[in-house]
Amino acid sequence: MRVLHVITGLAAGGAEHQLRLLLRRLPYDCEVATLSNPGAVATAIRADGTTVHEFTMASNRDVSVVGGLRRLIRDGGFDLVHTHLYRACVHGRVAARLAGVPVVATEHSLGDTHIEGRRASAGVRALYLATERMGRMTIAVSDTVARRLRAWGVPAHRIAVIPNGIDAAEFTYDPVVRVRTRQRLGIPRDAVVVGGVGRLEPGKRFDHLIWALGEVPGAVLLLVGDGSAGPALREQAVRSGVGNRVVFTGAVGHVRDLLCAMDVFASPSTQETFGLAVLEALACGLPALYAACPPLDGVPDSGAQRLSRDPESLPRALRAEVLRLAERDGARLPVPPIATRYDIARLADSVSRLYERIVPARQRVESKGTTR
Image (tube, rainbow, N blue to C red; front, side, top):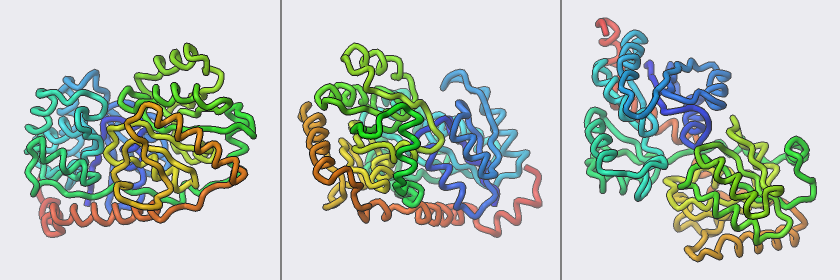
């Protein structure tokens, strides 16, 4: 089976890294089309041997990409199209329908009020639902996302819940990597480092993390990612008097080295649909503070602490973790079972079985004898 994955961008982010991991384990001939931002993850995917096609979209309303995608799908002899993220889902479903090829989508980032950082207006929802009907199935990365899809009007029988996955071994802590990474970033070896990972967008609420840093004397904040809120966050750090204690790394291809350099991980976003970064931090032996992470709901002894709605919850929790860190003399925490429960191999197996139901082997053989 030949599968074309269409994704909005490949700079950095949970969905992008999830696709990279999935491609390594799918037993099919896969290629990728990115509609914008062919950055660090595109480089990593190419290094793994997968072809990446680059398109350029000026905005979500730039429909010229549909024709290019349609030609790629037909000329490439693809049996199935798999779309990821809002822009790719909308345009990719249309292109696949025009090419006469079935399409599935993965919904990574549907929050209660926003989808991928944009407000889920009536127009955004209507366009999403109109193109959703062109697909065969939408994969929800958590029960929370499935519930939101149903609330939007997506029929339950067209939703498959397949949780995200991680390769926990990729995030194994290494003290040598910790020292090397801190040296590269100019962070003192003995500094307490609080870390955050994700797109620098307003919905991630990294401004709360910068504000909380002022309540944790001496700590350094390491922010990993890039996005539209970057300039405002840098300005806030300077204005708040903690500019010399905040390190911005920009987008990176893989976060393991940065996680090794951290002592405490924090995810203040309340709009997370899964919370991959939290699980990755746990796999690296970090204590994790989070506002939303569906896989941890109802899980005791996860190694993570959920933040309350109290504005003081974050700085209070950070101060407590700094004290615990001193009590255990900086030692890493044991990796909790939850970090390995969501294994990427399970995700790939579930996705493969879904593909086989949509495009059975007999249909693939017959299609090769037709002109696309």
